[in-house]
Length: 76
Image (tube, rainbow, N blue to C red; front, side, top):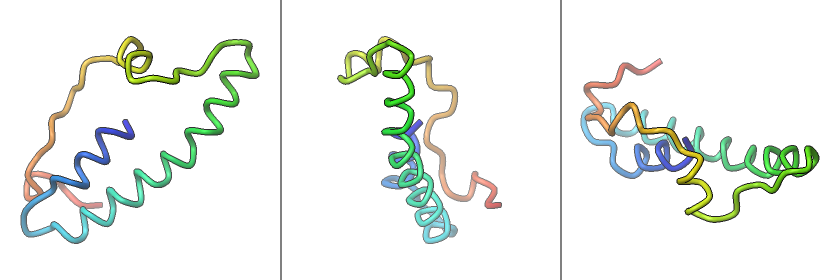
């Protein structure tokens, strides 16, 4: 999710660019902050937190939603 939202942030275009760019930035910063807590909870359960791209890819589900044009995304 972090990578997907960061990708949206980098690639958003269109008339709502500034609003969406800022929203995606806030979201990916919040997700990044949560990652350490999530990893620590995984470790507290006796498992190893995924620590490489290969580990993450092995756990990933197919992406449901590719990046879209800004005018295709409804702002909150």
